[in-house]
Length: 123
Image (cartoon, rainbow, N blue to C red; front, side):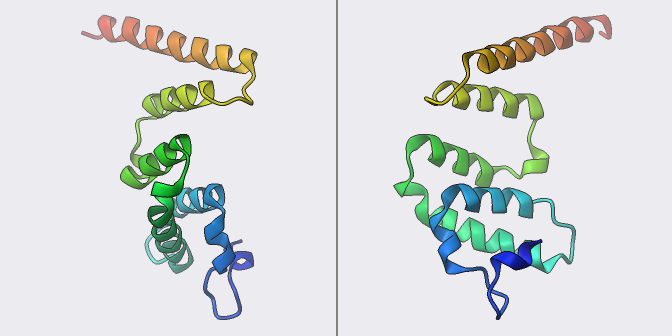
């Protein structure tokens, strides 16, 4: 599926580096590579190089997302921490749905409470 993002010689199209969200998505997808998947390894190298080069010219919210993605591999993140960061990022956007945001916060808090209660019973 990555072949549509590459030219005749197999290199990623240079115009892709202008799309920060696209680069971030490409980088995250490339983190799912298994050993020997050269296309995904090349995608990781291409996207991380261009994300690092642009990080100081991004808005603060996007810069924070990119830094987080580059620092910790996707499969090594703690999902609840990641969920909380998405909730906080979502809260700062202008296009957010109040209902969806409230639901995400309630869900997060309920799971946290459930986890605390169950951890006491196993002590």
